[in-house]
Amino acid sequence: MEVYADYAATTPVKQEVIDKMMDIYTGHYGNPSSIHSLGRDARKYLDESRRNVAKILGAKPSEVIFTSGATESNNTAIKGIAYQLREQGNHIITTKIEHHSVLHVFEQLEHEGFDVTYLDVNKEGIVQLDQLKEALTPSTILVSIMFVNNEVGTVQPMYDIDAIVAESNALLHVDTVQAIGHLDIKFNEFDIAAMSITAHKFGGPKGVGALLLKENTPIQYTQLGGDQEAKRRAGTENLPQIVGFSEALTLADTQRDTNNVHLLNLKNLFLVSLQERSIPFEFNGSMTDSTGHIINLYFPFIDVETLLTLLDLSNIYVSSGSACTAGTTTPSHVLVAMFDTDERAKHSVRFSFNELTTEQEVKYIATEIHKIYHKFKEEI
Image 1 (cartoon, one colour):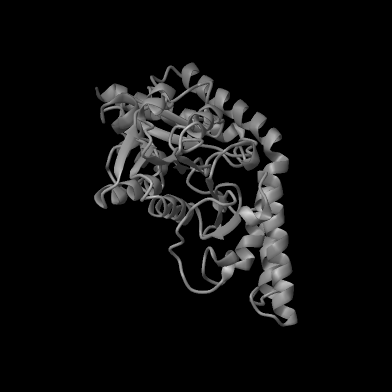
Image 2 (image 1 turned 60 degrees about the horizontal axis):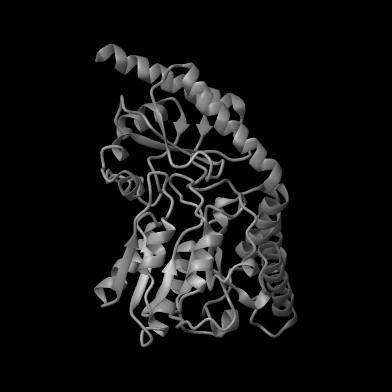
């Protein structure tokens, strides 16, 4: 059996999405900026996609900027807002568990003279609201906090965070990469200034995403050239991928409730299956404030590199954390922040499921880990 359990890293493109994209590739290949018929035809599909994305996410079409994905969206929002508001203040806030496309931007801004506060989290990976309140000052211009953590699946109390930041002079940016498709997020229900999304986490193509930007948000755009995306993001729009993104988002939205029930059942089945086999493990993150698709577990009897290798030999594909750093031996910065040590990170693995995952696959993973455990138990 072959089991893919790394859906938090990326998901296969759904057939419905491929069909929509192929239609654009083969029949609607005009440049949306061209004024001739083929260009106007392409523009129609671009506008339809923008309206659809906006409707599903509770935004205005004018607030949707198509990008190459979450890394670009995060960079654009954080650097753009920070640079634009620097004369008003140079203090910016994030957490120690953000994705590296956020953390590395803050580190760069820190080198450029910005005053950066990195908030701690508790052992469940949840931001402490009192610390956030204390960190905000009159010179704070930006706060960036992810909605759902990509390594442990913890859901932040975003309504509370949003309310706290709204009482200050700062703007709030939220990375929702692991939240879309699992939580019903409406942009207009928050005071969030900017929100980052990518398509390949919910059955869409890689290389496309969006930045939702509230009207009148002060921001300095750094990608210059043509007048695409209302002069906010230069470069010819990748229409096939944008249409695919829109279709994938539609499917994720309509199937969300059903998929969440399935994922919660799989999560419980996996944990019970490990317990029934007397495999020693501990859950990393929050059992209550988390999504169903990410399960991060600590196995004290084996190091993560060895476990990943042995699982791979059994055709089980998982990771030690973010796909952007999984190829390194550096301990997960998320787990280090949660437990204040790198020891736990050296023995922890992230399993991530989606609607394609079956109960049989989950039981197979537990069975193979059981075999590995007994092999190591005998050698000790």
